[in-house]
Image (cartoon, rainbow, N blue to C red; front, side, top):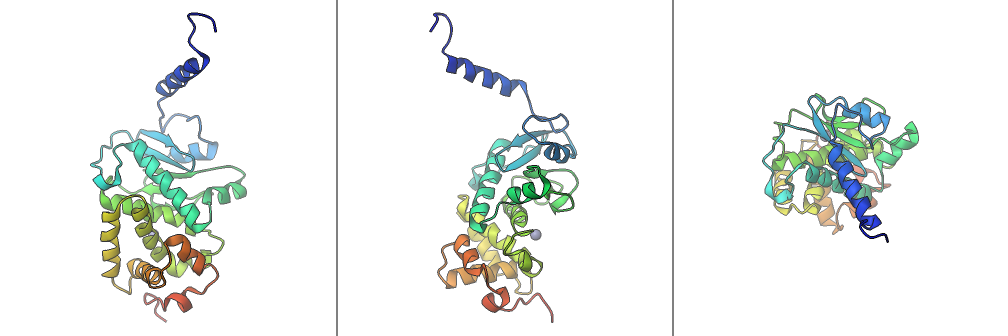
Length: 255
Ligand SMILES: [Zn+2]
């Protein structure tokens, strides 16, 4: 090594650090690392925002948004919010044995990750070639609140059921319940047992005629009654089965 010259690895690390500092992400600018389809969705953001990219998800975060973070989430900033969504995506893909990113990439010939963006769309938005998630008005639920994390878990779950090879057939009747059940499982496995316990309580006390909480409680009650070890075991059990014959008649359907 020549004297006076830092080792190669130190130079590379310094360059990467400089590159990260000198390229602040912006929803309005082209973002290196986003494909064309992803850039088109990110560009729909209502206000300037940071584009935070993870392996499976993209979060477009309004620059002026400064939430009060629900403490149990261990999320303190937008980067950790993106990490939380990435981890939730990975749990879901494992439990449901399905990766929606891969599914749509095969169809579109282009990889478009699941994007969360505040653009005037609400909830799970499946109009385009790749569904995305609109962040409502950031006030209902309040961004960063306990309910916000639960709501995101529910909406993220829709992405997995929408065209799931085994469960797409049941989503019309059971989809909202399946997402509210997944909400419980994600909160529990994301290290938020208090939020999960409160959600479980609310499912138990929910109206059986409600296809959201009523359906979720039927799934959770079945899982517990049959000592199934969490959502992977429940979905595996239900994979080829008739839901109504197995779980009971859905009371929110009036025949
Ligand atoms: Zn829903």
